[in-house]
Image 1: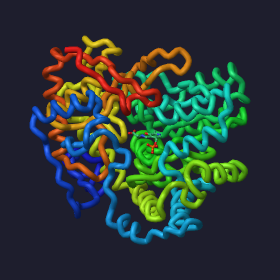
Image 2 (image 1 turned 120 degrees about the vertical axis):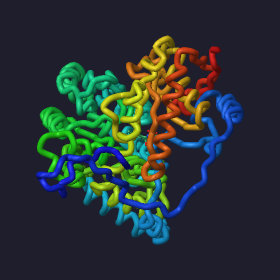
Image 3 (image 1 turned 180 degrees about the vertical axis):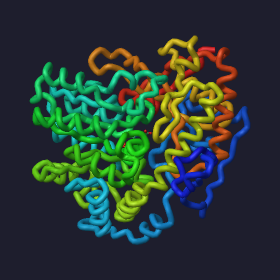
Image 4 (image 1 turned 90 degrees about the vertical axis):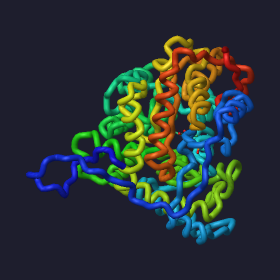
Length: 475
Ligand code: F0G
């Protein structure tokens, strides 16, 4: 990495403050070949996929920035752990390693493994949400909101207004708007709010963090009303890193210490281990309350598996236990977020409109600013992701009107303020050269933006339509 580092503490005070490079705290041991198909083949693949990058074959992709979910590279220590899988149906030793890692680094008392994050969301929503309930949160996430709705609840967004403004430079755009939350509690009544759902680094807002001060304040406010706080801890380590870098009083504390304090203001969490925890599959539900845990460990048997494996192989639990330990190391997380910032800076310098500040796991292109001549129901972000694939075989993901889906009561499109394309960086997978090539491709697509037309929706699935919807170009 040749990005400017945080101040090097090893420098003598008198030396000129010349920036020094830093590099990833690992070296490559195994490689996987990738190839860029020629332009006609890419065009054919895109038509075949209905202009939806989710429907492309991975073999046809050159640099895969669709998601950071389950796409990371495991360490040799994690792979060694896979060989230590105890595949007993009940009481696998790897479960206890996982439980220990979660207790030590996240601080929760009980853990129920699930096959991935949405498995935990399903259990939590079924246990706590009753028809007619309201679930406030800092911006929706697709699967989280759907599980809340399927349980009869209604999600209400209480994120701070600047989260909807891609140009706002505020450091904690994932924060909860405390006044809005307070007003909501007054209006609907605390008894109708089973919990507040707090996401650490808000995916749909561009990977924006929430501050420790805000988390404490949410705890204080909800505590007065007896309302639980449930964290979506999927990218809480990245959030802890931003607190260390941006929030007064945290510069001298380790990411591991910050993470523990952050989680202490919640009653439990849902977790997709496929992100922060550096594994290809897995998740968990964590709870402090004994009675709730009792219920969850019973319910998991119905949907996932016994409470000591919950949809995961023993070897996968071991890989996740070890991934958790690796994920909270300061040098790991600095390199991880640093690579995202590197790509973001390149695009910003070239005048490409992106969400600022650059988030933890991805650089988000602002498709509204990219294609101001397109209306939102012409799917500008979907089109932009398609154009990027056409240009270079780089695969990105739409995070705009298609992802937002339809209002479950009116059936109308949700029209989110943010119409984004996400360039999501897998952990420990791509090099700086891959980032350079990606930036060049985005800049090339930006150069020809005026001629680009929108898309028409030709197939729309009922649930989470963005995964399988199909489109045709308007030109
Ligand atoms: N919460 C957040 C914030 C997420 O980003 C995801 C998944 C989930 C929950 C669900 O977890 O996939 O393990 O079931 N996000 C992926 C993404 C799919 O690409 O952002 P899961």
